[in-house]
Image (cartoon, rainbow, N blue to C red; front, side, top):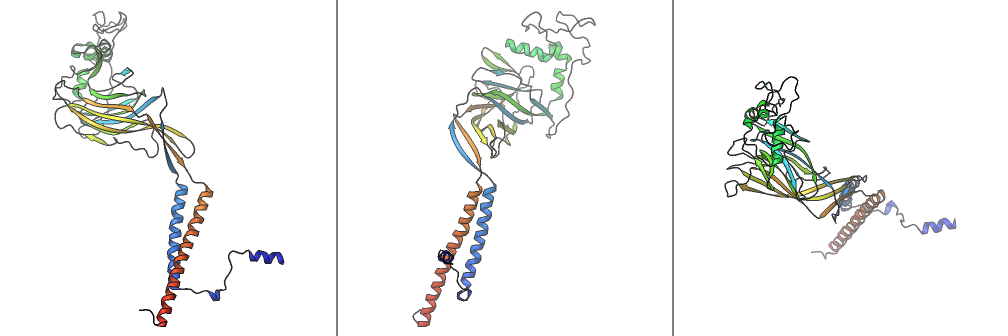
Length: 384
């Protein structure tokens, strides 16, 4: 019994007989208010526990030899798909003209509705027997080998399609000024296709895989070629004085999507009000690594952008088109999802409950003793 008595003496929470309790109206109000505060803080702390927080860290980007994926979805309401080409180039000298792989074009009517694409092919009824390289028509026992019209690199090179003739001219740095005289273009209905798409718009979406160095990609009417170290677009074949480069960027991102990413150009729209010109976007790409709560990493990018329109009614008239010039920040951003441990969560709950009860007890004691002091003065007639 001596040990038990000693344990009783260690009790930090002595019990008081209920007969000695004095319950007050102010105490009841303070109890209700403190209970509501505890419940609200409990809910808030529980939400913080189940929803992870994100920590941000900045480091110098030391990566080398990486590639950049550019995802885009852009609509040109007044440019036909047969006119628009996609090109890329960077400061390392790598250039790609009229890119078609991993890119889808949709023809749009004046209301923005998608038009069913027609099947293209060789063999229109205008010319049943294609023109051979040697000048004669294709016979039944011959293999077709079309002429490149002086642009062939060697005698055994053939250009069997209008596009192959364009490509041969592009490699030579020549402009194809008379496609209406090219047998392959006539047979494939090149001009008929352009005429059919007159007044239409075009939606272009897909992705580009480029070097992780400063460069640009652009959308321009005409066919690109390189002449005297200058990037040139051949517009002679289309014979149009002005092009409407109004556009809407439905989606533009650099790399994979990750939670919380904001792409500032998504939904951006520009309408051409005057003469044709060059619309330019200057983009600063920030390399980003996002690590989720399970430790999985997403390598992506964020970006900021400014824009400028270069009017075509100036000396050294710029080519009509939409250009995206991008460069990279030397700083890499690292986002890391972090969650609180269960022990930390329980500690915060105890702190909330204990803290609120302690503060409410202090307030209750202050109010109670204040009321008693005032009541006592009133009884003695000293309170005025």
